[in-house]
Image (cartoon, rainbow, N blue to C red; front, side, top):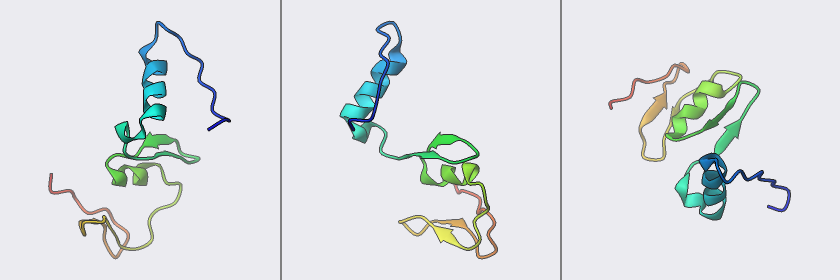
Length: 80
């Protein structure tokens, strides 16, 4: 991580939060994803679909088997 630069402003909680997340990655528990469409903290993991530059072409399910994309490439409605 030697190429990471944090400009710390002691009056701003944002830089403190960033430093805490770097020191304790479990705080975010999901990756930041950067695409040409934007940047998102992908939690829950299917949030990444909102910023992919091309649509998903086939079925996709989470690790627990919950369907996210059907066989036609369409998003499946969450049961939440």
